[in-house]
Length: 391
Image (cartoon, rainbow, N blue to C red; front, side):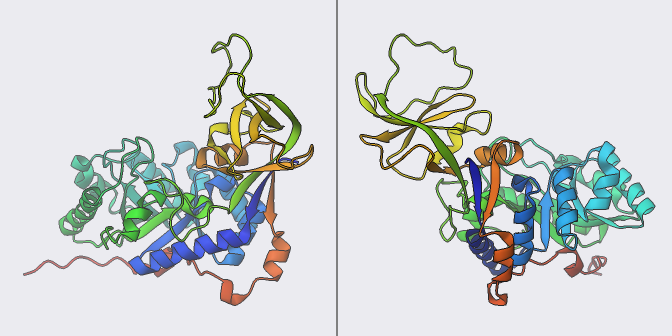
Protein backbone atom coordinates (compact mmCIF):
# COMPACT_ATOMS: atom_id res chain seq x y z
CA UNK A 1 0.00 0.00 0.00
CA UNK A 2 1.16 3.50 -0.83
CA UNK A 3 0.34 6.00 1.87
CA UNK A 4 1.27 9.27 3.51
CA UNK A 5 1.77 8.76 7.25
CA UNK A 6 1.12 11.73 9.53
CA UNK A 7 2.68 11.18 12.95
CA UNK A 8 0.64 13.13 15.47
CA UNK A 9 3.11 13.10 18.36
CA UNK A 10 5.76 14.60 16.08
CA UNK A 11 3.27 17.28 15.02
CA UNK A 12 2.47 18.01 18.66
CA UNK A 13 6.18 18.35 19.39
CA UNK A 14 6.75 20.78 16.52
CA UNK A 15 3.68 22.86 17.34
CA UNK A 16 4.82 23.10 20.95
CA UNK A 17 8.33 24.15 19.96
CA UNK A 18 7.15 26.80 17.50
CA UNK A 19 4.70 28.12 20.09
CA UNK A 20 7.49 28.49 22.65
CA UNK A 21 9.51 30.45 20.09
CA UNK A 22 6.51 32.71 19.47
CA UNK A 23 5.95 33.28 23.18
CA UNK A 24 9.62 34.14 23.60
CA UNK A 25 9.28 36.82 20.92
CA UNK A 26 5.96 38.10 22.26
CA UNK A 27 4.21 37.20 19.00
CA UNK A 28 1.01 35.47 17.95
CA UNK A 29 0.89 32.98 15.10
CA UNK A 30 -1.46 31.25 12.70
CA UNK A 31 -0.90 27.62 11.71
CA UNK A 32 -0.93 27.42 7.90
CA UNK A 33 -2.80 24.22 7.02
CA UNK A 34 -2.96 24.41 3.23
CA UNK A 35 -0.60 21.44 2.79
CA UNK A 36 -3.17 19.21 4.55
CA UNK A 37 -5.73 19.84 1.80
CA UNK A 38 -8.57 19.60 4.32
CA UNK A 39 -7.57 16.18 5.71
CA UNK A 40 -10.22 15.63 8.36
CA UNK A 41 -8.37 13.40 10.81
CA UNK A 42 -5.36 15.70 10.95
CA UNK A 43 -7.58 18.75 11.50
CA UNK A 44 -9.29 16.96 14.40
CA UNK A 45 -5.91 16.08 15.87
CA UNK A 46 -4.72 19.68 15.58
CA UNK A 47 -7.77 20.80 17.53
CA UNK A 48 -6.98 18.20 20.20
CA UNK A 49 -3.39 19.45 20.39
CA UNK A 50 -4.75 22.94 21.05
CA UNK A 51 -4.57 24.84 17.77
CA UNK A 52 -7.37 27.42 17.64
CA UNK A 53 -6.15 29.62 14.79
CA UNK A 54 -5.64 28.18 11.31
CA UNK A 55 -5.02 29.77 7.93
CA UNK A 56 -5.49 28.44 4.41
CA UNK A 57 -5.60 29.55 0.78
CA UNK A 58 -8.26 27.22 -0.62
CA UNK A 59 -11.98 27.56 -0.03
CA UNK A 60 -12.43 23.78 -0.20
CA UNK A 61 -9.94 23.41 2.65
CA UNK A 62 -11.67 26.15 4.63
CA UNK A 63 -14.99 24.39 4.17
CA UNK A 64 -13.39 21.26 5.59
CA UNK A 65 -12.11 23.28 8.54
CA UNK A 66 -15.60 24.73 9.11
CA UNK A 67 -17.15 21.24 9.08
CA UNK A 68 -14.50 19.59 11.21
CA UNK A 69 -13.37 22.23 13.70
CA UNK A 70 -15.94 25.04 13.45
CA UNK A 71 -15.05 26.90 16.65
CA UNK A 72 -11.69 28.30 15.64
CA UNK A 73 -10.36 31.47 14.05
CA UNK A 74 -9.81 31.11 10.29
CA UNK A 75 -7.59 33.25 8.06
CA UNK A 76 -7.60 33.50 4.27
CA UNK A 77 -3.95 33.68 3.27
CA UNK A 78 -3.94 34.82 -0.33
CA UNK A 79 -5.45 37.86 -2.06
CA UNK A 80 -9.21 37.26 -2.27
CA UNK A 81 -10.92 36.86 -5.64
CA UNK A 82 -13.95 39.05 -6.31
CA UNK A 83 -15.92 35.97 -7.32
CA UNK A 84 -15.29 34.35 -3.92
CA UNK A 85 -15.97 37.30 -1.62
CA UNK A 86 -19.19 35.86 -0.19
CA UNK A 87 -17.62 32.60 0.92
CA UNK A 88 -14.45 34.27 2.16
CA UNK A 89 -16.45 36.49 4.49
CA UNK A 90 -18.61 33.56 5.59
CA UNK A 91 -15.74 31.13 6.21
CA UNK A 92 -12.97 33.35 7.54
CA UNK A 93 -12.37 36.04 10.10
CA UNK A 94 -9.39 37.75 8.48
CA UNK A 95 -7.60 37.99 5.15
CA UNK A 96 -4.48 39.44 3.51
CA UNK A 97 -5.20 42.19 0.97
CA UNK A 98 -3.54 44.50 -1.52
CA UNK A 99 -6.41 45.81 -3.72
CA UNK A 100 -8.81 48.61 -2.78
CA UNK A 101 -11.63 47.18 -4.91
CA UNK A 102 -11.39 43.84 -3.12
CA UNK A 103 -11.42 45.45 0.32
CA UNK A 104 -14.48 47.51 -0.60
CA UNK A 105 -16.21 44.32 -1.75
CA UNK A 106 -15.28 42.61 1.53
CA UNK A 107 -16.74 45.56 3.42
CA UNK A 108 -20.02 45.43 1.49
CA UNK A 109 -20.33 41.65 1.89
CA UNK A 110 -19.48 41.77 5.58
CA UNK A 111 -22.26 44.33 6.00
CA UNK A 112 -24.72 42.02 4.26
CA UNK A 113 -23.68 39.14 6.52
CA UNK A 114 -23.72 41.26 9.67
CA UNK A 115 -20.04 40.70 10.33
CA UNK A 116 -16.81 42.62 10.71
CA UNK A 117 -13.98 41.30 8.55
CA UNK A 118 -10.38 41.91 9.62
CA UNK A 119 -7.63 42.62 7.11
CA UNK A 120 -3.87 42.96 6.89
CA UNK A 121 -2.61 45.26 4.12
CA UNK A 122 0.26 43.58 2.28
CA UNK A 123 3.21 45.72 1.19
CA UNK A 124 5.63 44.90 -1.63
CA UNK A 125 9.16 44.50 -0.25
CA UNK A 126 10.93 43.10 -3.29
CA UNK A 127 9.75 39.51 -3.68
CA UNK A 128 7.35 40.73 -6.40
CA UNK A 129 4.34 38.70 -5.39
CA UNK A 130 1.32 40.42 -3.81
CA UNK A 131 1.63 43.79 -2.09
CA UNK A 132 0.98 47.46 -2.72
CA UNK A 133 3.93 49.67 -3.61
CA UNK A 134 5.22 51.67 -0.64
CA UNK A 135 4.86 54.91 -2.60
CA UNK A 136 1.07 54.47 -2.70
CA UNK A 137 0.67 53.28 0.90
CA UNK A 138 -0.67 56.50 2.43
CA UNK A 139 -3.21 57.06 -0.34
CA UNK A 140 -4.29 53.42 -0.17
CA UNK A 141 -4.79 53.45 3.58
CA UNK A 142 -6.70 56.72 3.47
CA UNK A 143 -9.18 55.17 1.01
CA UNK A 144 -10.02 52.18 3.22
CA UNK A 145 -9.67 53.68 6.69
CA UNK A 146 -13.33 54.41 7.32
CA UNK A 147 -15.00 51.37 5.77
CA UNK A 148 -17.56 50.44 8.45
CA UNK A 149 -17.32 46.65 8.29
CA UNK A 150 -13.54 46.34 7.89
CA UNK A 151 -11.19 46.06 10.84
CA UNK A 152 -7.70 47.16 9.87
CA UNK A 153 -5.23 45.03 11.84
CA UNK A 154 -2.01 46.33 10.39
CA UNK A 155 0.50 45.71 7.64
CA UNK A 156 2.27 42.63 6.37
CA UNK A 157 4.53 41.21 3.70
CA UNK A 158 5.50 37.99 1.99
CA UNK A 159 9.25 37.55 1.73
CA UNK A 160 10.84 34.76 -0.28
CA UNK A 161 7.60 33.10 -1.38
CA UNK A 162 8.07 33.72 -5.12
CA UNK A 163 11.48 35.05 -6.06
CA UNK A 164 13.46 33.47 -3.25
CA UNK A 165 14.27 36.78 -1.59
CA UNK A 166 16.23 36.03 1.58
CA UNK A 167 14.73 37.84 4.57
CA UNK A 168 16.97 40.25 6.43
CA UNK A 169 16.73 42.79 9.21
CA UNK A 170 16.67 45.74 6.79
CA UNK A 171 13.55 44.47 5.00
CA UNK A 172 11.76 43.85 8.27
CA UNK A 173 12.75 47.26 9.61
CA UNK A 174 11.24 48.84 6.50
CA UNK A 175 7.92 47.20 7.33
CA UNK A 176 8.07 48.51 10.89
CA UNK A 177 8.72 52.02 9.58
CA UNK A 178 5.78 51.82 7.17
CA UNK A 179 3.47 51.03 10.07
CA UNK A 180 4.89 53.95 12.05
CA UNK A 181 4.29 56.22 9.06
CA UNK A 182 0.61 55.25 8.90
CA UNK A 183 0.11 55.57 12.65
CA UNK A 184 1.59 59.07 12.70
CA UNK A 185 -0.16 60.21 9.54
CA UNK A 186 -3.63 59.03 10.53
CA UNK A 187 -3.34 59.15 14.34
CA UNK A 188 -4.52 55.59 14.60
CA UNK A 189 -2.75 52.56 16.06
CA UNK A 190 -2.17 49.46 13.95
CA UNK A 191 -1.65 46.55 16.34
CA UNK A 192 -0.19 43.97 13.94
CA UNK A 193 2.80 43.50 11.67
CA UNK A 194 2.44 40.14 9.94
CA UNK A 195 5.70 39.27 8.21
CA UNK A 196 6.77 36.00 9.67
CA UNK A 197 6.73 32.71 7.79
CA UNK A 198 8.78 29.54 8.28
CA UNK A 199 11.49 31.30 6.27
CA UNK A 200 12.00 33.81 9.08
CA UNK A 201 12.48 31.29 11.88
CA UNK A 202 16.29 31.10 11.55
CA UNK A 203 16.44 34.88 12.06
CA UNK A 204 14.05 34.59 15.00
CA UNK A 205 16.26 31.98 16.67
CA UNK A 206 19.24 34.34 16.31
CA UNK A 207 17.27 37.14 17.97
CA UNK A 208 17.39 39.29 14.83
CA UNK A 209 13.66 39.85 14.23
CA UNK A 210 12.45 43.30 15.34
CA UNK A 211 10.09 43.00 18.31
CA UNK A 212 7.47 44.97 16.38
CA UNK A 213 7.03 41.98 14.02
CA UNK A 214 4.34 40.33 16.10
CA UNK A 215 2.44 37.91 13.85
CA UNK A 216 3.79 34.83 12.10
CA UNK A 217 2.17 32.50 9.56
CA UNK A 218 3.87 29.12 10.04
CA UNK A 219 3.22 25.89 8.14
CA UNK A 220 6.21 24.13 6.61
CA UNK A 221 8.31 24.23 9.79
CA UNK A 222 5.53 22.49 11.72
CA UNK A 223 4.78 19.78 9.18
CA UNK A 224 8.32 19.12 7.91
CA UNK A 225 10.69 20.77 10.38
CA UNK A 226 12.42 22.54 7.49
CA UNK A 227 15.16 25.13 7.78
CA UNK A 228 14.34 27.10 4.64
CA UNK A 229 17.46 29.27 4.74
CA UNK A 230 20.29 26.82 5.42
CA UNK A 231 18.63 23.52 4.51
CA UNK A 232 18.12 20.53 6.77
CA UNK A 233 16.00 20.62 9.90
CA UNK A 234 15.62 23.49 12.34
CA UNK A 235 17.19 22.68 15.68
CA UNK A 236 14.48 21.60 18.10
CA UNK A 237 12.05 20.41 15.42
CA UNK A 238 11.33 16.91 14.14
CA UNK A 239 11.58 15.99 10.45
CA UNK A 240 9.55 12.78 10.78
CA UNK A 241 6.06 14.23 11.19
CA UNK A 242 5.02 13.34 7.63
CA UNK A 243 6.52 10.57 5.49
CA UNK A 244 5.69 8.62 2.35
CA UNK A 245 5.55 4.83 2.35
CA UNK A 246 5.71 3.33 -1.16
CA UNK A 247 5.16 -0.36 -1.88
CA UNK A 248 7.85 -2.43 -3.61
CA UNK A 249 6.51 -4.10 -6.77
CA UNK A 250 9.83 -5.41 -8.15
CA UNK A 251 13.33 -6.03 -6.80
CA UNK A 252 16.08 -7.40 -9.00
CA UNK A 253 19.82 -7.20 -9.59
CA UNK A 254 20.41 -5.09 -12.70
CA UNK A 255 22.88 -2.75 -14.33
CA UNK A 256 22.93 0.61 -12.59
CA UNK A 257 23.26 2.54 -15.85
CA UNK A 258 21.13 2.24 -19.01
CA UNK A 259 22.30 -0.18 -21.67
CA UNK A 260 22.54 1.23 -25.19
CA UNK A 261 22.16 4.68 -26.63
CA UNK A 262 20.06 7.16 -24.63
CA UNK A 263 18.33 10.43 -25.49
CA UNK A 264 16.26 13.13 -23.79
CA UNK A 265 12.88 11.87 -25.01
CA UNK A 266 11.61 10.98 -21.53
CA UNK A 267 8.69 13.26 -20.53
CA UNK A 268 10.10 14.05 -17.08
CA UNK A 269 13.35 15.58 -15.94
CA UNK A 270 15.99 12.90 -15.62
CA UNK A 271 17.34 11.98 -12.19
CA UNK A 272 21.04 11.16 -12.40
CA UNK A 273 22.20 8.93 -9.54
CA UNK A 274 25.66 9.53 -8.18
CA UNK A 275 28.52 7.04 -8.03
CA UNK A 276 27.42 4.84 -10.91
CA UNK A 277 29.60 3.74 -13.80
CA UNK A 278 29.14 1.64 -16.95
CA UNK A 279 29.05 -2.05 -16.11
CA UNK A 280 28.24 -1.49 -12.45
CA UNK A 281 25.48 -3.71 -11.08
CA UNK A 282 23.31 -3.67 -7.98
CA UNK A 283 19.84 -4.31 -6.66
CA UNK A 284 17.08 -2.00 -7.82
CA UNK A 285 13.67 -1.80 -6.18
CA UNK A 286 10.69 -0.39 -8.04
CA UNK A 287 7.94 1.28 -6.00
CA UNK A 288 4.45 2.07 -7.27
CA UNK A 289 4.67 5.86 -6.93
CA UNK A 290 5.63 8.14 -9.79
CA UNK A 291 5.51 11.60 -11.24
CA UNK A 292 1.70 11.52 -11.49
CA UNK A 293 1.62 11.25 -7.71
CA UNK A 294 4.31 13.67 -6.62
CA UNK A 295 7.46 15.60 -7.42
CA UNK A 296 9.85 12.66 -7.20
CA UNK A 297 12.86 14.98 -6.94
CA UNK A 298 11.43 16.00 -3.56
CA UNK A 299 11.66 12.46 -2.14
CA UNK A 300 14.62 11.24 -0.09
CA UNK A 301 14.77 7.60 1.07
CA UNK A 302 15.02 7.44 4.86
CA UNK A 303 17.52 4.57 4.58
CA UNK A 304 20.78 6.40 3.77
CA UNK A 305 21.97 3.49 1.60
CA UNK A 306 19.09 3.92 -0.82
CA UNK A 307 19.28 6.33 -3.76
CA UNK A 308 16.56 7.26 -6.24
CA UNK A 309 17.72 6.25 -9.72
CA UNK A 310 14.82 7.63 -11.76
CA UNK A 311 11.07 7.85 -12.15
CA UNK A 312 8.35 7.63 -14.76
CA UNK A 313 4.71 8.65 -14.49
CA UNK A 314 3.76 5.67 -12.32
CA UNK A 315 6.96 4.13 -10.94
CA UNK A 316 10.11 5.15 -9.10
CA UNK A 317 13.33 3.12 -9.19
CA UNK A 318 15.53 3.00 -6.08
CA UNK A 319 19.09 1.68 -5.97
CA UNK A 320 19.24 -0.29 -2.71
CA UNK A 321 22.84 -1.55 -2.76
CA UNK A 322 24.79 -4.74 -3.28
CA UNK A 323 22.04 -6.87 -1.74
CA UNK A 324 18.30 -6.61 -1.28
CA UNK A 325 18.68 -5.04 2.19
CA UNK A 326 16.03 -7.49 3.37
CA UNK A 327 13.38 -6.01 1.09
CA UNK A 328 10.70 -8.29 -0.32
CA UNK A 329 7.82 -7.78 -2.72
CA UNK A 330 5.01 -6.06 -0.82
CA UNK A 331 7.33 -4.30 1.63
CA UNK A 332 7.47 -0.51 1.70
CA UNK A 333 10.30 1.97 1.31
CA UNK A 334 9.90 5.10 3.43
CA UNK A 335 10.78 8.57 2.18
CA UNK A 336 11.21 12.01 3.63
CA UNK A 337 9.27 14.53 1.54
CA UNK A 338 9.97 18.18 0.83
CA UNK A 339 7.21 20.76 0.56
CA UNK A 340 6.70 20.48 -3.21
CA UNK A 341 6.44 16.69 -3.01
CA UNK A 342 4.06 16.83 -0.05
CA UNK A 343 1.71 19.32 -1.71
CA UNK A 344 1.40 17.04 -4.74
CA UNK A 345 0.85 13.94 -2.62
CA UNK A 346 -1.80 15.53 -0.41
CA UNK A 347 -3.70 17.26 -3.20
CA UNK A 348 -3.78 14.29 -5.57
CA UNK A 349 -6.35 11.47 -5.52
CA UNK A 350 -4.00 8.50 -5.62
CA UNK A 351 -2.27 8.22 -2.23
CA UNK A 352 -3.96 7.25 1.05
CA UNK A 353 -3.43 9.52 4.06
CA UNK A 354 -3.18 7.93 7.50
CA UNK A 355 -2.67 9.50 10.93
CA UNK A 356 -0.62 7.56 13.48
CA UNK A 357 -2.03 6.78 15.97
CA UNK A 358 -5.65 6.91 14.80
CA UNK A 359 -7.37 10.14 15.73
CA UNK A 360 -9.74 8.50 18.25
CA UNK A 361 -6.85 6.75 20.00
CA UNK A 362 -4.82 9.95 19.98
CA UNK A 363 -7.70 12.02 21.38
CA UNK A 364 -8.68 9.53 24.07
CA UNK A 365 -5.10 9.20 25.29
CA UNK A 366 -4.29 12.90 25.16
CA UNK A 367 -3.60 14.54 28.51
CA UNK A 368 -4.14 18.16 29.39
CA UNK A 369 -0.44 18.51 30.18
CA UNK A 370 0.35 17.73 26.54
CA UNK A 371 -1.95 20.41 25.18
CA UNK A 372 -0.40 23.39 23.40
CA UNK A 373 -2.68 26.42 23.53
CA UNK A 374 -2.37 28.26 20.21
CA UNK A 375 -5.15 30.79 20.83
CA UNK A 376 -7.24 32.86 18.45
CA UNK A 377 -5.68 36.24 17.77
CA UNK A 378 -8.45 38.70 16.99
CA UNK A 379 -10.24 38.56 20.33
CA UNK A 380 -7.04 39.54 22.13
CA UNK A 381 -6.50 42.72 20.09
CA UNK A 382 -7.76 45.79 21.88
CA UNK A 383 -10.02 48.31 20.13
CA UNK A 384 -7.89 50.66 18.05
CA UNK A 385 -7.44 54.05 19.74
CA UNK A 386 -6.22 57.20 18.10
CA UNK A 387 -2.53 58.06 18.33
CA UNK A 388 -2.05 61.17 20.47
CA UNK A 389 0.33 63.73 19.04
CA UNK A 390 2.46 65.84 21.35
CA UNK A 391 1.18 69.34 21.92
